[in-house]
Length: 109
Image (cartoon, rainbow, N blue to C red):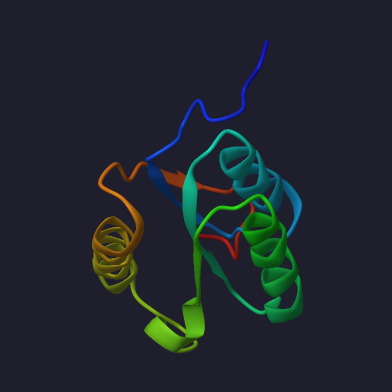
């Protein structure tokens, strides 16, 4: 089955996209044609590598550090509001369709 461009013109937001399952989700979405926004906690180098791979597929990518938005110990309400803000940013910058994909095992979130 050809997956190329199945998600062309769409965008997604992935939390925890710098390594492991989250990074694989980001790469798969990009391989299927989506532009992707994703967050990372402490793995800036890994996040930048994943972003470069997404760009290499000809897709747009946005990435954010949770710490830049939340500080070191955010409350749940703050995290929820931040996800809303990030989804809005992804939607306005790279596309209209913004499903939220939360990678398992991301900082106990």
